[in-house]
Image (cartoon, rainbow, N blue to C red; front, side):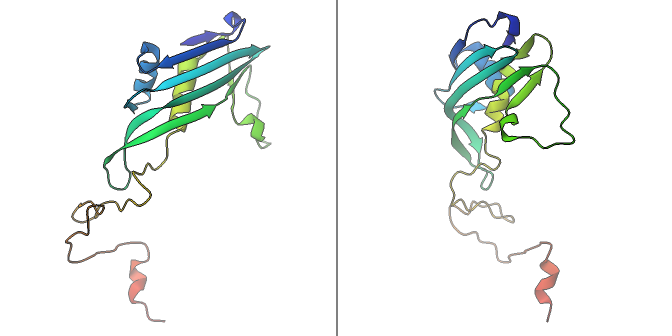
Length: 171
């Protein structure tokens, strides 16, 4: 969905689910596996050369636990409010960014992609290291048994790390 700045005369409210083709395409491009009702609410409003966006995305997705590699469900329930400013991105090399500038995106021309913005917000809401539970034990690095199901039968525990050579050091 491409939004043209000159056509945005009054605020636009969008409410879509994963059944809508446009949103289904956004979820597909973000490579997200949706489990049940997944919804997006967007409010777009133009203020001179600025487009203010308020959004809320909610729903469950299928992910893989980063410790045990088992499938897991993750609930996305995120509010976001990026600001789109028409014009050139100011040179920020010599100064730091203020907190109010973090959600500002500059765009050229008369249009910007709402789909790309939604996809970006979805990806930002994902955890860096998804865990099925805080107490997940992971898998044995030798026999690949899930340690959540019990201890493995490995006889010898080999620990290699950057400080492995120091274990026999006498001080």
